[in-house]
Amino acid sequence: MQDEVMRAIRSARRPVVVFDVDSTLVSTAGRHLAILRAFAEGRPALRELAARLAPEDFGWTVDAPVRARMDLDPETASALQAFWADAFFSDRFLAHDRPVPGAVDFVRRVHSAGAWVVYLTARAADRMGARTAETLVSMGFPVVEGRATLHLKPSSDTSDHGHKASALAEAAWLGEVVATFENEPANANLFARSFPGGLHVLVGSLCSPGAPDPDPTVLRVDGFA
Image (cartoon, rainbow, N blue to C red; front, side, top):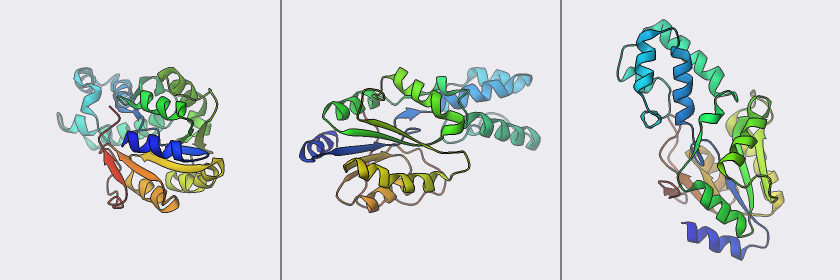
């Protein structure tokens, strides 16, 4: 897959490659764990369990590894979900994110080959913007070297899918979109419809519940390593 992307970059006059961030380039498992541990303060049984968990125990939801190991009463479960929703979609715990293995090297390779890199993320500018740029730079992703755009939602009220749909016109304005990378099948399908001549890649298996099947033209990979 990576060689195909490099060939597509070399064959385009102004190549553009679009990357989703969370669960595509960046693992949020450590963020889930840090949020759970913060919530567990003052709850001894939950605090003890959270201390034994590792980022690898987390998938889509913060409560799944907890429910697999102990009973959560409805009141605690509801409080955890509310705490997580506020914390996850803020910049308070972004320092716990980690790059997906191989992602930094691949994005740098794409950038060095001459492509314009677009980070198209559903993170909201009003709650996560500044720290998102800082953490991507600290991980080693090309953000401030030129030919790179960080495209965030304007506000938390904007829908994720709607934001990405409206942002595609801006990506196309930069040049020829030769490849896209995403973990959500609905978005990968949107990219495939919008840019039928490009390579569209679904990364990993972590996506929202009830996601549609990927379009037959969408490639699937486990990761970047």
